[in-house]
Amino acid sequence: MKRKYRRTFYFMLAALLPYIFLNPADSGVNAFPRVEVSPEAVYLKPCGISGRESGTAVPSPEGRGADTEESGKGLLIPEEVISYWRSAMPRAERTVPDRLPPLVDWSPYDSPVKSQGACGACAVFAGAALIENLIRQQYPGMNTDLSEQALLSCIPGMSCMGGWYYDVFSHIRNFGAVSENCYPYAGRKGDCDLLCTYPDYLVKITDHSPALSLWGENHSKDDLRRALQNGPLVVSMRVPDNGTFEGSGYRGGVYDYEGGPISWTDNAHAVLLVGYNDEEQSFKVKNSWGAQWGEKGYFRISYDDVSDDVKFGSYACAASGVLLLKRPALLRISNTGTENLNVSRIRCNEDRLAISPDSDFRVFPDSFQTVIVSVPDWEAIPVSGMQTDIRIRSDAFQNPSVTVSVTAERPPCSGGTELGNMDCSENGTVLRDAIIALQILAGNGSGELCDNYPESVTDVNGDKRAGMEEVIYILRYVGGL
Picture 1 (cartoon, rainbow, N blue to C red):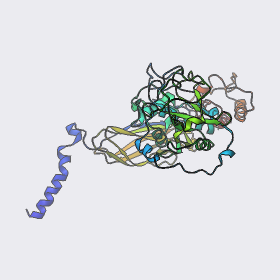
Picture 2: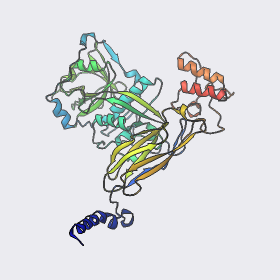
Picture 3: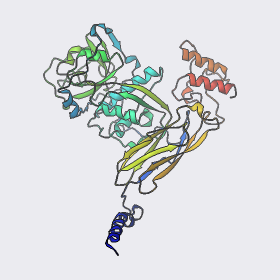
Picture 4: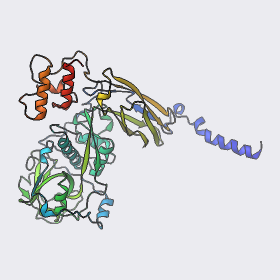
């Protein structure tokens, strides 16, 4: 054999050796990237899902409770963020402080106060509280309760030992936040596999502050007042360790620290800043230590504590652009091999489905990527339903192309089920229901929803309130459309 052909032969043999002698299917060794996709079939319905929908994770006995008196903290500010703001200054604002309104309060949009317990998950609770506030601003009357446990369990590097709230916002922007009943709070780091497949809703945001935050520790009370014109903020503070703030140390009023130096170590805490009051010279803040602490879970803190050792309002972050996806499916792409799995594209021949992310992402060994499958406009789905396939292409050693079937059905989701009645009469669903829903929607109606309304098929989007979608649905039902 000539030398040049021999060299080519050896080169080809070396390239083929892994496939000849190290076939993962035969050897039992999970070498190379390996892909597993679950569930194998996706079912989408705007008013109910059959299957592993919610409540699949059972909270531990030491889980969240409004009466919990634990004062967990746990904020971990990255060193690169601290280092950056040692020399950088916040961006100058043009708004004259004296022209700002004397009072701002975003707390009417807050969700109920929660307790993180002894777990150092303040970054998760503060971040979730901000998004819940934004949802209620954009969707009045929607009683949103996001799952802190899903964020705690599914965000890499987040645990009861602490975390950074920028990672919370980044996760919600990329992967979304699910409802509490999709993964109830357990007070400890859990397994992300316990996340339900079909959450009631998925919330995403389109924008948030950069990883370095809005400023460091060189901010002023006016920086906070200006930023609060656009909405609440997640901020950092040093919790005084002299017993005047934690536990029963603070019972109400405007807190004004007068002690000595405080370290960020073991004392860093994330909270939701919801307002200010110039007359009192104080900020209003939502905490995550239960409703029995402070002023029903809130506290007021002096403007002076911005510049003293408390460093209140440091490393502030904001978010905006709430996107609400109703009853999406969470498709999980797992890599059970030993090398990185690269997913090149996820495609569907139906543009009535939305898939995110849909291309160019990496899944590390023994890890997974959550892909969101949803219907942006249910009016575009035929009454008879729609069936299609999603094709996932990757560089997996085996099955580089995986197909998942998708079925989308419009309401009524269960044939023959009598619709819930908004006016609680015995006449079934009638035109009066649509009129009552319109009155409730306009805020001037005397009609009330039935006790069983949240479980009724009439509650089209499952938000437990009467809205325009319910009105349209009832009118169509009454008209036989």
